[in-house]
Structures are given as structure tokens and as C-alpha cells.
Length: 115
Length: 110
Image 1 (cartoon, rainbow over the protein chains, first blue to last red):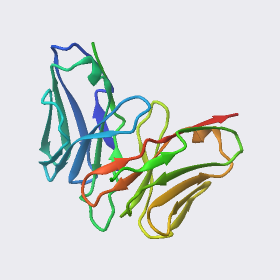
Image 2: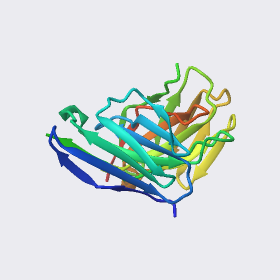
Image 3: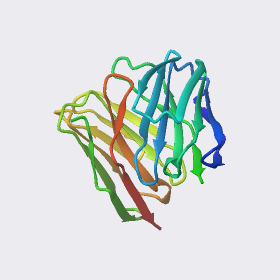
């Protein structure tokens, strides 16, 4: 199984709402990532978890709160978002980098609209 | 710095024509990865190149890694409408961070 799944596919939320994005993989990968992608732009790294521990936080505002409950699951909790946070949120997973192999497998993403 | 420059930004081709996108770095790359993102889709891994001068082929796609490991290219022979999308190169950093180029958007006219 070489699939990363994400739910929901689409999400519309108000600026006072609290919502969560979910990501799951069953490839045995021990690194999981959250990216934000704006239209016509490349994916922008937000967070990296390695062996269920937060490894990288790219200075993301605290209104985004990641969580890694176990090696297969990754959540992104959203609270008090701004309209400019509307984007495609991509989850990815990979084996921990070794032998210069850093391939990442992306999920289909959640298209988020903040009103 | 660690950025990778990708050109062109976009290209329109007639179906059957060839297409090439280039990725350049001012510093030596440990590896280069290529991803394709269809319109409305998500990035899909195509290939990773690690060795200096490496050339790999996938059907009509040819990937090259420069001798100095500072540049890479993706060439598509005889484009088809299914090739439409954005092609990203990405550099590995030896850690968990992967730095993506800006992407090249390919438009194919039937």
C-alpha cells in the first residue's frame, strides 16, 4: 500500500471555528509532514514529525497545532484561522532520510477555505 | 543559499512536441527529486537522482543530473495531453527538509 490518505477533502470554516485535518499512512514511514500550498506555488513546509516527535516547525503561527498520535496518523488542529490561511494542505510521509534517499509520498490534500 | 531555480515558469506546446524543464542550484546538490502535480491534484513523486551525470528514463521522460551536481533537467519526448501539469524539482538537504523549485507549468494543446 503506497497511499497517504487525508480527510476531509474540502473544508470551509469561519474564523472562530475549530477544526482538524487528518492524515494516515500505512507504508511504515516514520517521518510525516504537513505542507501548505497556495495556488500556482510550490508546497511550503510547515511541520515534520520523526518517530512521532516534532522535528521541524517552520515558524508556523500557533493557530496551527500539529499532533502525531502514532506512527500512522498525523493531525493538524486549526483554530482562529485567517482568510489568508485558505490553501491546499498536504500531508506527506517518508522513510527517515538515509543514503541520500528522501522521497516523499503526498496525500491528496485538504482544500481549506476560511471565511 | 539552498534554493533551486527552475525554468521556464510555464510552457505551451503543441501535442507531439518535446518539452524540457531545468533546475539549477548555486551549491552542490546531494540529490534532486522530480514531482508532477496535475491540475487540482497533489504532487506525485517521479524520480530521485543521486549520482553525478546520472541519466534515467521513464518511457517518454528523461531525467538528467549534471556532472557537477548543480543542475538537473526533465525532458519529455512527444508530449501528450496527459502530460499537462506542474513539474517541480526538489532538493534534499540530508535531513527532513525538502526544498521545492517554483515549478514549471506545462500546457499541451491537442
